[in-house]
Image (cartoon, rainbow over all chains, first blue to last red; front, side, top):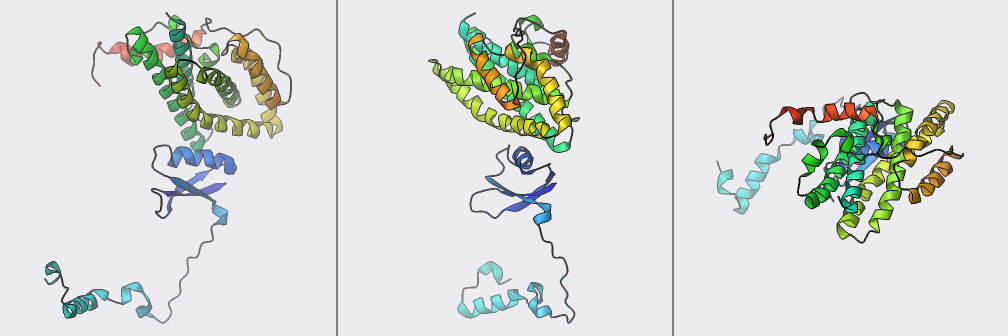
Length: 96
Length: 223
């Protein structure tokens, strides 16, 4: 079985994908995850997820090019600068 | 040599030589994850050896490295169980379980020692050994779960049993037998323990390899 391993570097931080490992069952996976992702004190917690339990979504149709719905379709930089100018809070290094 | 030093060196030598033997699986363990785990256990054992040698060294006015590498093979006090070489996997797991179980019994006795330094280092070692025991137990379950695994494990246990008894002093042996028989669900043979003063030829070979670099470099070399 393949297990996906997620590790948390410090308390309160999000878990991030660390890698995967092969193990015959969860007990083996726990020991192997400890050895591979925990023995150098690099993690405060680990999540082990059987790969089969992960649902993957990888199709995101965008037939009508609605780019204003995308994060990169809306430039906030210029608007933010204008708003700061109006409010008089523009930092000197931003005015360039 | 005091009884205290003798005890420290016996355990340190067990851990060093077993650590060395387990490290012989690095790169060739049954699969990658096990390779990493078993190599890590081997490193831990050698770390335990260092802590114990340091206590002995303070008493003998020497250093941990000198104790680990500058004695003659016949001066090592390790049990013959840890000297055996190139065991196939089922026997490696049998030895691993037998040693870890014997070690747990021995550490429990030493943790109760009046000597605060010895009790302290034993407690520290035991906290790390807990993970080695988890590893050994999961493998025993795995082997016991199939006909072939069970047959190979049982054969290995019978073969290694007199060696396992030799790890412990007389008074602790019945506890090892009780735990092993309960774990395997069967009786183990009556056997004469293989004592610590037996040096298998394999220990000489290991020593040659282990001390080769140290012997080749002039004393006081800096690395």
